[in-house]
Amino acid sequence: MSGDAATRQKRSRWALWLPLGLFAAFLLLVFYGLVRPANRDIESAMVGKPLPEFALPQAVPEREGLSKADFATGEPSLLNIFASWCIPCAIEAPQLEQLRQEGVTVNGIAIRDRTEDLNGFLERNGNPFERIGADNVSAVQLGIGSSGVPETFVIDGQGVIRYQHIGMVRDADLPLIRSKLMEAGQ
Amino acid sequence: MNRFLAALLLLSLAVPAVAQDGLPPAPYAYQQLEDPALEAKAQKLMETLRCLKCQSQAIADSDAPMAGDMRSEVRMRIAAGEEPEAVRQWLVERYGDYVSYSPRLTALTWPLFVVPLVLVLLAVFLLRGRFRRKDEP
Image (tube, rainbow over all chains, first blue to last red; front, side):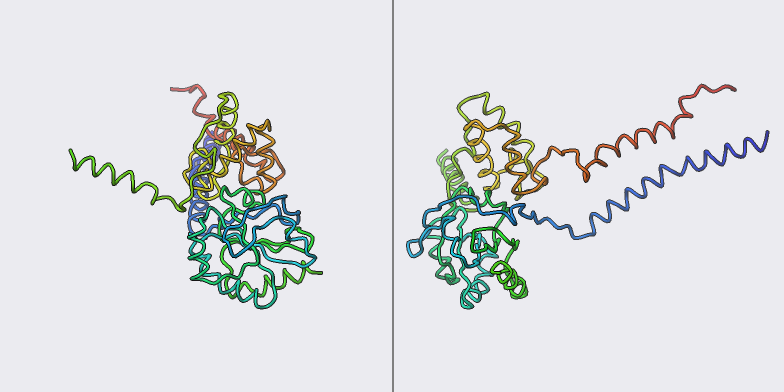
């Protein structure tokens, strides 16, 4: 009789602590989520696929517009998604210029931009671009799965997207981008 | 009164400066479709698509320029006769499942559907004694 009561008490004690244990586990999960630096980058699912058909008008008078056909040169190139109103875009300009001087073709798509603003931007930060297309409703940006500025895509000589770099191109990113360009050229 | 009018005027001048860029919004960013049935379809879809700039919001709720561009893209595709699920699929092909607020049942997402069920069963198990009539006073 007393033994039966003891086992029942033992079992109910176990059951009593379980919800608290679950709650503690939940709290741990919450703190882990708060402390861990979350990665908010959205990778394009278009890597490995060809560019969509597009033909953008010129964004500034000094550079031609940009269309899909401009990438079918047989040589890999970079496609930089940028805007004059984007501050990291100004910071990455010297790195893009560096790549241009190494012989890399850099094409640009200006997102929601005005010619006079762009002219000022290119004057201040230099113009590494071979061509600049004006995407005033983010249509091509949506078409290639880009979710912000700046982003830089490696495009192979057949117009297939081979690599996506999210955020500005820093000096430390250059070796990886060079190697992705080499890969795309093979 | 004049002061009030001047303040109103200043306020109306200040609004465009708040925008991130100086361009007018895409054609259907803030403009509903002419056909109410198509607009209802588009609206329902837009409430379940994630804004990529403001990731806790749907594109229907967001004033980010990119969300406006996405609304315009969605409305134009619906107006051209595409089914809402086809438009969703078009976006998922570009941004992955993350862009959709309507989770599909896949090898990765099944715990989303199973875990609540397990928790309810566990609660019933833990509370089963509470629902039993007491035999002895």
